[in-house]
Length: 93
Image (cartoon, rainbow, N blue to C red; front, side, top):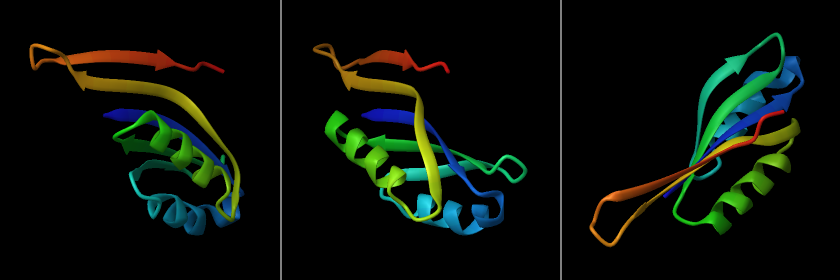
């Protein structure tokens, strides 16, 4: 499984509509809205890295989205022993 934290930026006056569009993208869940800054905090959960890339691209192309940036990525896979191997990548601005 792959999990990414994404910050989406929208015009504050369009935040509600844009957040509904963001939340409708498969695998995306909106967790926080910043009405003053026009920011949406979302998590994208997919099976593959390619689906992560496609999901981020879809977010970037949504009407009302000014920018969508990956801020953290985590991957969890079952190892040979059946336990989770976890990898984390942070993307700091």
